[in-house]
Image 1: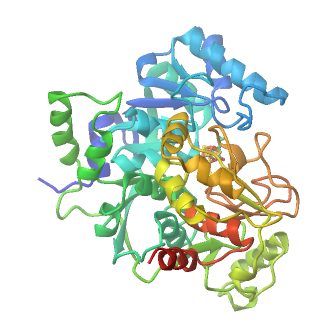
Image 2: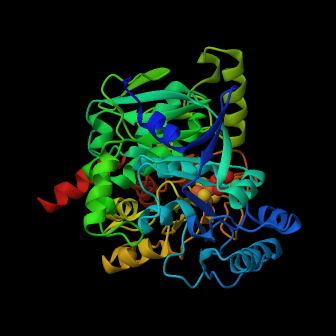
Length: 474
Ligand SMILES: CC(C)[C@H](C(=O)O)[C@@H](O)C(=O)O
Ligand code: SF4
């Protein structure tokens, strides 16, 4: 039998019918829904007098619009309407909803995995581009548009063009202080924001299998910023142990049987990909983006590039425009860039491990004068866990604000935003113009690097602070 990739196995198992021109009708195992991209989809169902085909495979939450200081105090009219509409739609169509009072509420890509809804081998969709996050479990997970949301609600199926496959082989061992966020930023900087266009990426190699599920999720979350359709990691023991005992996974014997099937999903020896890239993580330093796409990044101990040095006219033009927007000079040291805002949160980096890493850097230190720093846990469960571990006290004692779960400052769709011309060290995934507010200047970093920037008031190599901490404990 021809060896198959993880992607091919899932794709074939879910193809209901195929069309000659590379189109397949896929069965969808899990449909996640949030308040921003669902209202018209439900309206479409109503107008056509349709019901939701599989409410039991559909799960909704609210995250984008929720104010994270007081979730119940929604002042914005559109936000309030979208939240109320989701509530009404879930009731009308019989869909389970993690609403603002639910202990399960949080960012859609954080709660799917932690509830165990996300499982290896599933096809998972959501009207949201960062649905790729769930691929960390060896699922085929991708974002869809609102008309597709309606199609899946009505039929539980979706037409998809057969994508190509791309292996991103991670080689070497990461140095301490270099995180999954740095790896994915490094990959996108090296291979460009469209390296994955038309492809489903599978991360392979020891460096990814050594990673925790949280770290794998960070990588798969951001793979779409490299243009990919989805990201995946083959299920292994780390995957199985993360899922064991979660509320929505099979329990007991059934779990063991499922685990066996999940492990068999891994790409077969000798399976081939349409494209193979390798990335050496051993020489990587913590990354900081300086521009307006996630591929415009540099090592923290490097400099802002001089646009004149770039190879193509298009790159030179893009870099000039980015530097003008970002208010940066060519050749300046990354560590000379000051920050006024620090945001630790988003579906990229708001899980418990992210908060632990940031708290480790912050412990016993103070946020620099003039810096506003926010920690926004990705879900109620992350928040509770962090509070059980006392992380909130570490953050608050240092001068951070400790918030309720939501997308928050990741995008300016709720009251948390960065004012024009001000700069933010952000653990989110997009640094586009205006992403965190009109005129806001976003620098993407890991949670540890964001925490270090909060303490120093500028970008610093977090490894220096880690050494200090280590020295202090000897
Ligand atoms: C609002 C939503 C449609 C959007 C997305 O699809 O990604 C948002 O989550 C984002 O990160 O920009
Ligand atoms: S946290 Fe940011 S990237 Fe993630 S779903 Fe929310 S807005 Fe999109």
